[in-house]
Length: 106
Image (cartoon, rainbow, N blue to C red; front, side, top):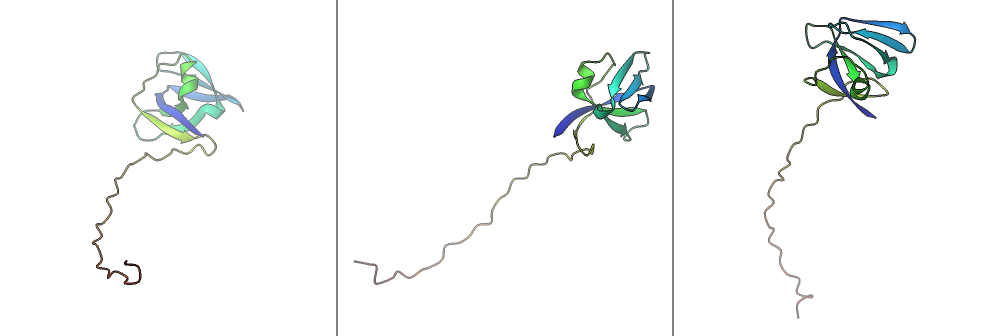
């Protein structure tokens, strides 16, 4: 199943139980995130950003930006590739000269 995730900058992210993480933002707000809704670190930038599912962020008070979003597979926790649409233009085929069958004409 596809899950929409946002890259969120956090001051710290610590595991508090085997099912939950404690997320602390730079402004001091804290939130408890289920481990099933955490999809790993965002290595594309210099800052400490983490991929967290969008639906759990709507229910938490963490400051968030919707600038960086990605789709993840919920079972493998791997980022899905972007969809690219390509237009297929078929090659033109010329007409063949076919002699009519004399038995079929009236």
